[in-house]
Every structure is written in C-alpha cells, then in structure tokens.
Image 1 (tube, rainbow, N blue to C red):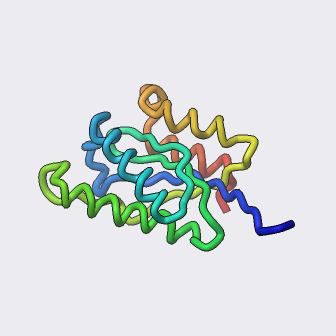
Image 2: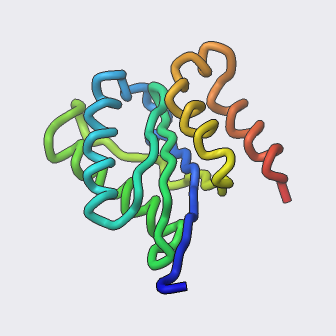
Image 3: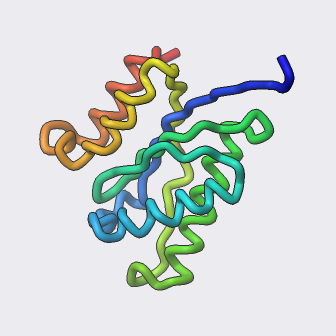
Length: 142
C-alpha cells in the first residue's frame, strides 16, 4: 500500500447551553456553511450537518491525526466564537460542554447523512432527550 488509508466516520451531537432554542433554519444554514469551511481548513472531511432549534448533528470523516474529542472541541469552540464575533444571536452564545460521538460504518454513512438532513421532520415525532436515549441504547449503554 503506497500510503495509509483511513475512513473514520463520526456522528456528533451537541446542544446549545441551557438548551436555548435559537438555531433557526436561517442560522443553521449560516452555521453549516461556516463549519464546512472550518472543517476543510483543519483537514476534517465534512459530510453533513443539521439539527433543530437547540442542538446540532454533524457527520465527518476524522483524520487519524485528530482525536475524536479534539475534532468536536475544535468545531464547537470555533463555531461558538464565530457566532459571537459576527453577532449572529443576541447576547453571549455557547454550546453545552458535553457531546455525543457515535462511530458510523461506511455502509451506513448515507443513511446517517439523511437522518441528519431530516432533523426538523424527525423532531416532530421525538424529543431530543428521547433521541439521545435511543442512540445510547442502540450503541450499547455500558
């Protein structure tokens, strides 16, 4: 093999601090564009981003030189800084410190991307809390 080859797909989920419902579709669109550009700068391959009023989902291919934790912390930190620097929202914006990170097989990548795109439809039927519990149960709560 001429060089190393990796595909480390990770589905991240994180919420706004205090679960503030401020991520309107317009803000999500601007945030997605910004995160896509930032991921490109950091060598993180952006696949999909979506969410609902109080949380985000992100699917990326993380390079082996960046840990799963470092990738999400870079993205969350830089994006909250950006939101505040361009006065996208009134007051000081912040993400919740916690997050979820779930591995995704190559064969499920397209299905997960669609799930992320369809968050608004999805949350007509299920709450964010129930969604997280369902994912934890699916992946195995140790």
